[in-house]
Image (cartoon, rainbow, N blue to C red; front, side, top):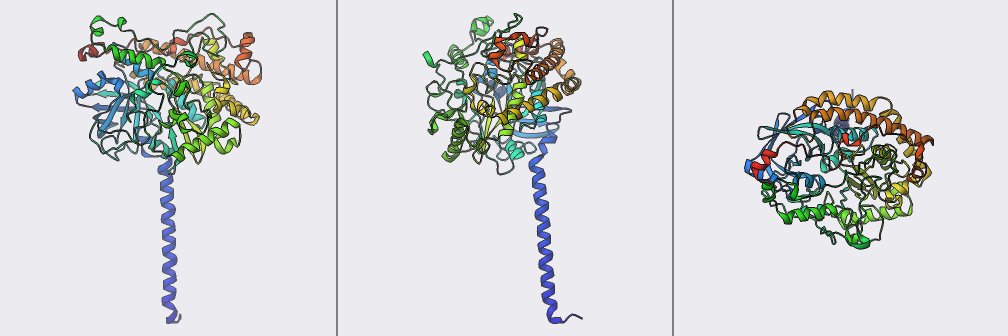
Length: 585
């Protein structure tokens, strides 16, 4: 029998051990739950169903809605109630979104099919949609296939690139069918937590297009830098968020500082035209009020039109005619020389945050400690996909945009964004030049040295070999092993009826069905060219392709314009009667 004087001590020890075990178990369970929430938030499954379509119903005051559409270029939020797959969220902020795409719709008298952003916490602080803070509703402009952006994100996901979630969506506005869109997870706090955990780093949205400057009263990509407690239309500028930097007023640089805007045809550094096809029509649309019906011209604001023309032409320029950081080139340690990066911060930032980015860019420019300052593997995967997709409305051309820069502990990586002009939908020349887009010099209108995030990595043999491995995987497995073709067929079975009944479609249903064959053939030929370039049977640089075009894959049998191109959408949108009713420009 245990001596009574030890009983109290034994009980005390037992209680302590039991308590410690319980606390430890609770911490483990909590950590596991936190990890699950971080990796798979509720909205990932409730919203982004790859096998289905999101049903979105928007209800807003009709006069507010009409005013928002009429003044879409201001990109101002209005409140609305949104029902998504049967669940209603009240007082959600909605606004039109886009740069050239928005201006294209704004200048077209026949359509008001804008892209939109839904910000769930714009009016109600802390409100989310199953954990999601913001959702983009993209109008699938310049894409006859309806699938370019979806397939691009599918390939990015297949290749392990950190990228947004996505799904097709059918949109109703005030109980009327509005259109069939693609929904994309915005790259903000929810995205950061899902991909990087609660201790995520900083995100920036470099944007060199002058039109971007006119809208940044914190209604731009970085809407998070604002006071959510204000009533509608009273959320002013936040810290560092959307403030216009010096030299960013949208003025067109002149003389030697004028931007080099690639035209059609050879598309800058694209290979020469082989078979005489010329898709040079895919230039930025001209805003000509004289082309509008007479009743429209009288209502069109000429000053606003001239501003839009100027902003459309101001491509790629920042302070003193340079890119102000969008090219990710190191200039010096002056923060002001990177204004197009830092003025578009997603989160609140400090000078220390800026300095880490500049330090990383400096080491990138010198090719030093690359794996310390660059997430090399992620960036190589990103560029392999971008190259395979011939996605030129991006970092690799004069546009130098449509990506997010992620920085964590001084290391940089790139997050993909905006792929409706992938599959050679932008400034890509003819079909043969696009199919054979050079894998070792995958830029257009610029030199490789002008895009150091790409060129400095490919200067390292080990990294170039890894980049080639990723391209081989894309060509052999994704395009060449039936995944791409089968995905198109499956998507068609899911969305075909929606496309057929899309009331604001940019293209007819017959054009849609015909485009799918072209899309499949483009993927097949692109894979053949990539494989040939990797094996050395096809030149892999732009210079070599210009010197000997006889070895290139002949793609003259396909017409890129059947898949949709920049400037090729919007003319068939059938909301003209509604625009006249609203007296829209």
